[in-house]
Length: 345
Image (cartoon, rainbow, N blue to C red; front, side, top):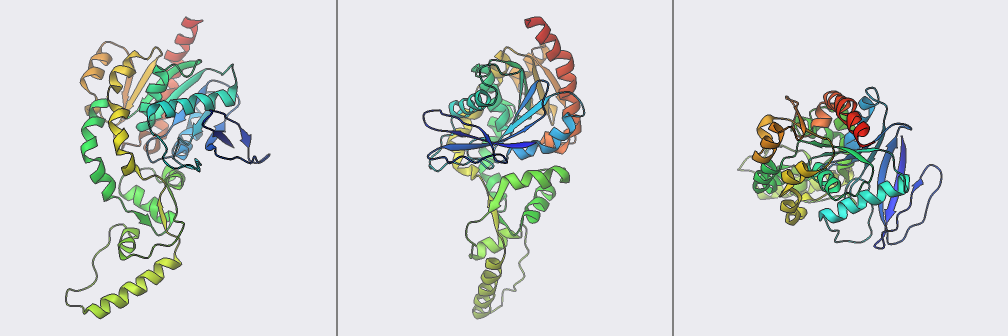
């Protein structure tokens, strides 16, 4: 696997380099981190969910190579992972996401890209649908969407801010963040969590010294002080806590998802109808059949796409059960996509 950096400017100029081979001085550019692996076969273009990074596909990538002959390209989407932009105020409208994706593919493969299967989880699934519908990938041969359905997503938006507020704001270490992700059920696979969480959190630039951070670092913490403790003792303890925090490496979330709220409805409204109109073979992987909305239920009965439910998984299906996702995808590509390629040729 090699690390690729793909910068983009307002003029849509994109460049590629392997950091192990050379370095490029960039000014006023957006830089995407892209993980590429494999040398032959169709390309699986992997798009992560909101707040995650390309590292969320690491374990799945290792498994899929044992199932089919393929290449993998996983990129950190704008404002996620190791993406770099010196300019504040990034837009999260879909147009910019699928333009980024189209340019990344253009830089990697030029005017003659290999067959591409685009696969997206959650927000990345919605982006994959919009990318496919906008015809930004000329060699697209299939679409796979993981655990995102318009009806369920729209219903969940009202409680999203409460969910984000319920998460710890900081962690005292990366191991602490990994432990929280597994105990909270965000990721149910420890192997995946150990890789994935490094793309979700980062070291704080400066140690935080407020009492609130001390509590959030520990995640769930019990109150140890009695109500009758004198004020002076409280102040002394707070000072000691502050000094202890400064000695630790404090981690926080890379992406403040709460600030993207104005884009949420646009990400998911009309998604089901758009998914059904995409003119390539389609696979929908869900953690539960209850996630299907009316449009998709009708479409599934009409045979417009294939669907598989993977029970006993959380929302991060490809991290919780990478073997099952790889099996489902390999079967889909060998049976359906192969026939599609023969038909269009």
